[in-house]
Image 1: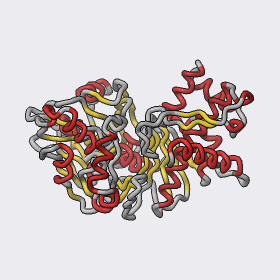
Image 2: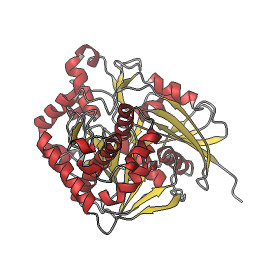
Image 3: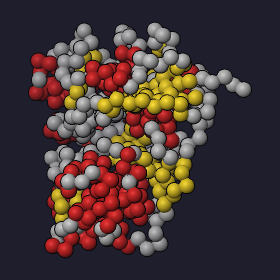
Image 4: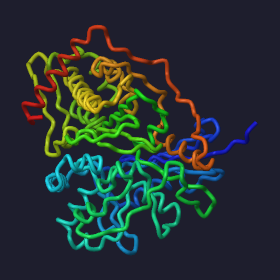
Length: 467
């Protein structure tokens, strides 16, 4: 029998740091610990390290290799001494929307899509650097190096070496790395920041970033969604819909993606292919905010939604509570439409917010189809995927079968899987099973109610925002 080898995976998300330890041979989850991150859209990166330590990151005895995944796009701008010149601006910080629009206009959306793979929106790192240059030029003048959250954690794990590292999946979300040529675009970085800056070396999918002082191999790491794709082991025709803090819709493919509309970001995956992705800012937080407005906890909220007619009798929420990324409406606000005295009840309101979140993701799914990505089934993950209210409507609204994996930390699991890959020298990708429950939801033969709701959603979005 092959001796047990243990690997670890880190998921440093917007909300928390989670660390899993896994049997490298079988993929069996051995242990999970987590620690919270402060709320907000900007943060001192040291808080990520505090959470990593609190989650047991400095107590990984017996771990042979470790991989780090983290929220994408966050701007970690460092001075000559390796200290942040400004708090890290996270993906969901929309203050750089004007800079995103200006960068798009400067080069043209088609050029961005064809040459870089993405069209700037406020989430991307390049727009945050442009914001820093325009609003805090004295700080921008001190920037010597720019990292992403996962780069920063890996760099600290390895004792802050002279050269930091990243991977292709995370680099592809910056706006100054070309997915098509696999090279940085320093001209775009300089146009945004007003000066050049050092960038991390881009590692291959199974390459090692280094070895810690205690002898732990550290893999290349990845952006969170690319890491989730590794953890789930998705194949052609699988599309992941994740409903967590944010909502994401993505697939792993070999197809070249160049969407000049900017809806579909042509990111890279963590295995050498492409990861076309759409993200919404308003995921499960919409449901939590609605529950708070109703004065109930999230469990009672779900029960209320279940008491409403499935279409909420025409009541509908456009869930843009924090602005929105898909569609690109950073200044949008939430809207409640179709209000009548008969449907102004707590149950109807709960269901209206559920419908709004799922319709928003269904629009993203349609955009992915529009880029030629096959959609055979949806794999539904994220905290809100466990909500019966979401499960009840997802297959009908999406129009394809929905598979619900066993609850798990798939981002951290993907990071651990990459660590196992690096541990073996990148020879064979670890063949770990994906735990699927017996729950698979098929679209109803008659989906007319869902089609009517989606049509109403599209009409209200067009009327309010013209898109």
